Length: 215
Picture 1 (tube, rainbow, N blue to C red):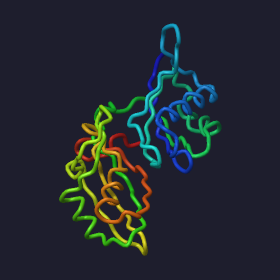
Picture 2: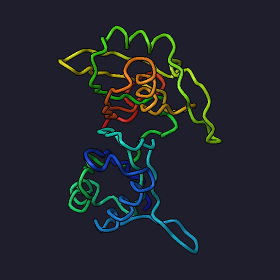
Picture 3: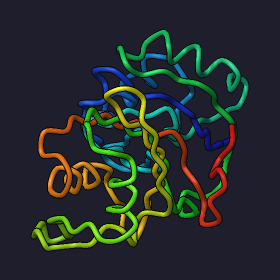
Picture 4: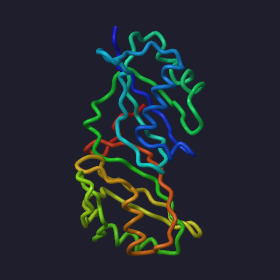
């Protein structure tokens, strides 16, 4: 029997500096080391059936990642997180595993928690990201073109706490995928060139703004 497993996992700390391809390699190795009954592709050079729902930008942490992989039986579903956590490297944490799940094509938005050290007032930031914030955005041909990113921001809210602003921002996750680093680029261009940012992806949402895959 062939089954699809959806794994919810976190990627934090030093692991945030790993690229998408490096993250794939981490899970290919860890799933094998965990001794799971994995499903492989057919052909001359078989490999694990494995996919990540939405690539995460380098330097961005996440507590909302989703990984799909195939297994040949379901007798060990409940033990998968513990077995993986025993072999995953620092910064990765397997939170929960279930059979199946909604099609990843239904992911429309990603929500991020953003922290920035700055003296800029929240009202100025709110105004920038609801009016016009033009950045040099890279297209599929790897050319940089001026792009107003505001149409790709579903919502944004911020508050001050001491020398920091804390944001909750929801960005498009397809057509196009808006990397939160563009928020930082716009901020440095229009508000504060010395601002230091930290991003954490906290949720994946469908087209109605509801949780894509509650687990």
